[in-house]
Length: 312
Image (cartoon, rainbow, N blue to C red; front, side, top):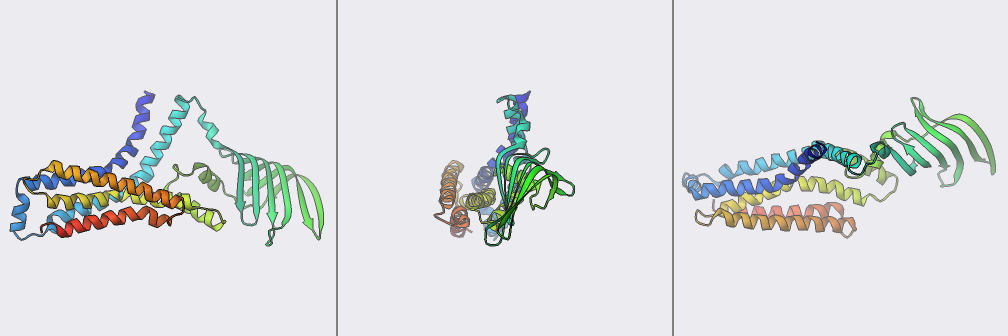
């Protein structure tokens, strides 16, 4: 039963990944059958241009691109996470609750650094925590050490620790049992950081990237992932355009098999270029947007050229 449930969780992601190729095959087979039955010849004889009978296929490909992106970011990502948890619990015999525990946590906020031995996301508690407060010249002005840092309704509260403050060149040491600590750390931010990158939705990843850039961190790998999710979803539109354009070139004697073979070859080349462009972007040889979207632009131009040169 667990095996059936595991593969059931995997189905949405597999279906989402298969939509672009399904669009290509559907357009090629559909137009190939119309060509074989000479219905395309009849439409052209009636004075109808290619956009009238093939345009709806391209628009459907565009709609399926949006469906692919939406389904991948909702059902696909959610069920993939459940499949991973099931695998950890049943196969690796690992307690899923351990995923809530982060070790050796570092966090950079506005004017401070936070370091903790562990962070328990389920209870929102840091253990063995140190907070370093800096001035505008990046000089240490105060250090807080505590056994625990707890997220309460009013904010963060430190328990059983000491404060070392530097004032007028003197260091002042003060122990405490409980103390409210003003920190711009949100539990949601820590949960997002722990889930990177595959478990985050596109909007969560976008917000995380903005935060990384604002704090001065390198966000290039995450920017590549952000563009890649949209680019791969719009592969349905690109392959749909190529499939329609190739279908318009098929004669009633050419055969559907040749069109499918050429289409699958172009699909393979497209996917290879997409991964190569993403690799160049991750290594910062190309800007993330250019590296990821260049194959889409190139194959969209190929599809458009095939469309223009097709019999109208």
